[in-house]
Image (tube, rainbow, N blue to C red; front, side, top):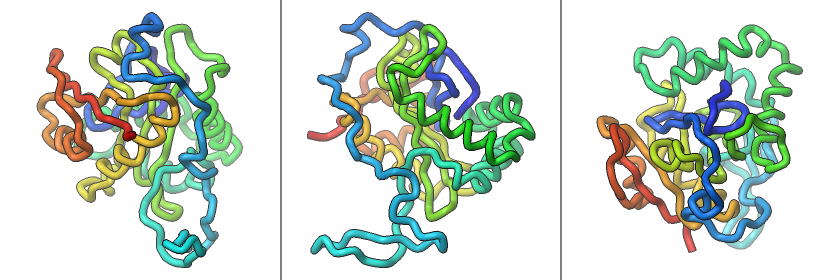
Amino acid sequence: MVAKTKGATGPRAPRGSGHDSGPGRPLTPRAAGAGSRTRRPLAAALPPPGTGMRPSGGTRRIGPSGARQNGPMPPRLVAPDARYRASFLAAIQEFVTGEESDSGQAVAGQELERWGANWASPAVFASYVDGLNAERYEETPRVEGWVPCTHLWFVDGDEFLGRLSIRHRFTPFLLEYGGHIGYSVRPTARRRGHATAMLRGALPVARELGLDQVLVTCDAANVASRKVIEAVDGRFEDRRGEKLRYWVSTGS
């Protein structure tokens, strides 16, 4: 979530549920490729933002026969899109005023410092969103030592529920502590299984990025985050400082 920090990407990657990003240069090709296979262009694992969504919030689904069906669609990961501005800004306020002190709150506060009242302008918010989406591309200019990152938002209709980032490769800090994936759920949407759904939904996207497995970390004291990682079959490797490190397969 999204002020700049080294070891993540241009806009800061989400660090919710105890997941951190931090300083460090990219590793050597061998170390940076841990858990990687030959990269392919990001395929259509995610539809363009808003695809199939009706203005009223209705959706179109693909039935077992391949026919389009009308009806509610469950929450899903999409590319950041300015259409979610009102709900996103409400979520930022929840983070900064919430009673739980966590990394999601800290990052939201940094975002407000950077963007402040300017976010009220649709044009400024659209520029912010464009910057997030550009972070996935290798050719996007970035601070030395930062890595490309795919940002995703978790939405239900027009409601923003949370966000997730997939770092395409490691820095030394990410390998030790931060991992490939960081995520955060807005305070009013927590304890509904969204974090698990987000992490599970991100795995095929990570595989499209060339990652056979991803490193996901959490604070040792964060029982909820540990359960989320274990729910997607995270394999515990070790503890380093206050961080527990898990490897999760992205599928076959």
